[in-house]
Length: 202
Image (cartoon, rainbow, N blue to C red; front, side, top):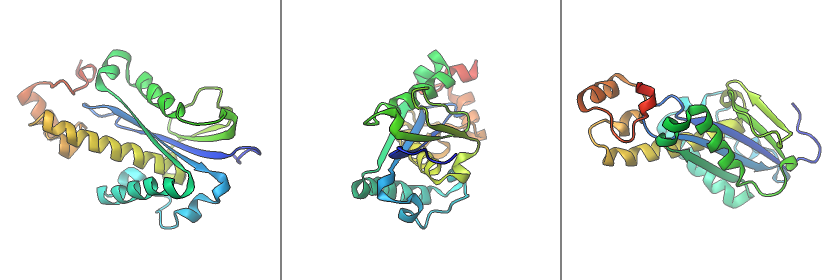
């Protein structure tokens, strides 16, 4: 879909942690002001066509820092919303992701018609954002979605590393709450902690 006339900003949105067994789900948003110029011209070294989740942690950290710094130079916007595991258990993962998405969109200045949203997977924005496109595996083909994915994943990973000090023994700093063999073994040994999504074990 071509960017409609009158649109001032291109927006990428993705989430991280949907399938994790513990911790929050994260929704990331990267907003690019089109008046600055072409996004790829500002990020020429980014490996387009590569799933951001498959980048090494060091590469993701590098690009996270780059994108954050880019906001100071260009007026771009980085935004991440974390929705807690307690909300996921109470409402479900789909409403939790929707809550995170709407929290990000609330940070956008101006009118919805000024934005063209590109969303990954099955994500959809409220209907007032008339210019939006949902793209399967968008973080592999759309740099702006990939940048949103990096923001979400790095922010969530940092949160899980902090949670690992509070909920010691589960190895959260390693697997970030996902269902690895080590994680399941620790749950079997220690039981569920307060940071686990209990609805995922029901």
